[in-house]
Amino acid sequence: MSFTVLVPARLASTRLPNKPLADIAGLPMVVRVARRASQSAAARVVVAGDHPSIVAACRTHGVEAILTRQDHPSGSDRLAEACEQLGLDGNDIVVNVQGDEPLIDPALIDAVASALASHPEAAMSTAAHEIDSLDDFLNPNVVKAVLDAEGNALYFSRAPIPWWRDGSANGAPPSVLPAPAPLRHIGIYGYRAGFVRSFPSLAPAPVEATEALEQLRALWHGHRIAVHVSHVAPGPGVDTPADLERVRAVFATDPAR
Image (cartoon, rainbow, N blue to C red; front, side, top):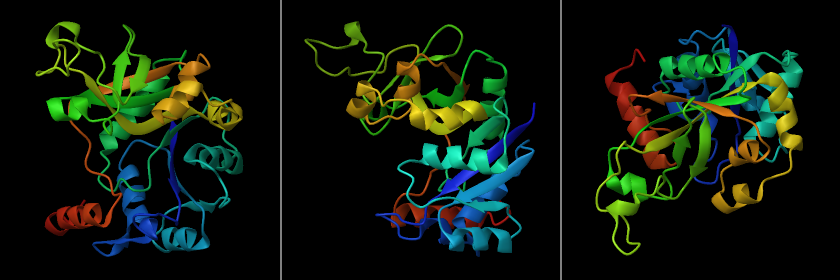
C-alpha cells in the first residue's frame, strides 16, 4: 500500500490568528504536524497552504509544501487543487491530516489509509473510537458514527446515536451509555484522489446542512465510507489559545515528539 498525506493549512483563523505558524517548541505548528505525519508509512507528506508564509516556513524546515488558492470555501476544495497540482492518479490514496493536529498518531494515519485500501468499494475512509463518557455521548459537539457489518458508515450525527430506547424514560436522555459502546468520529479522512477531485462538484446534501457535517454529502450521494475503529482517543487538536498552551506543555515535557 502506498499513500500520500496532504496537510491543508489556512492562515486565517477567527479564534487563533496565524494558527499554522504558531510556535510549538521552536517549530511552526504546521511543521510539527508534517513531521508527525512523516513518521507514518506515507510515501509523501505535502502541506497545501493558502499563503506564501506557510509554504516558506515549511520549506525552511525541509517540509514539502505547495501554494493553493486563498478563496477555497472548504478544506475539500483545497485538497482537490492539491491533488491536481501533484498529478495524483485517480486511484491513489490520499490521507487528509488537519494542519492543527500536532499530536496526530502516525499509526492512526496508517490505519485510515489501510481501511480504504482494504475496502475497494469505498470512496473514503475515516476513524472512530468508543465513547466512555455519557457527557460526550450527549454533547452535540461530539460527532457520533454508526457502522454496518462491513465497517462502513451508516450515518454520522451530532445527536446521541444509536438512541437506546430502553435506556431512557418518556423520551428523556439516557442515564447510562448503551451497549455496545457508541462511537465518536475522529476527524481524519482517507480518499481516492479521483473522488477528492469530484467531491466539490457534488451537490450539498440537505442533511449535511442540518448537521453541519460535510461527510454526509458522500453518504447522501451513495458513496461508502470505511471506518477504522481505534482503541484509543486521538491527541487534542488546536482550535483556541488555550488548546495551543496545552499542546505546548506536552512538547515541553516530551521535546522528541
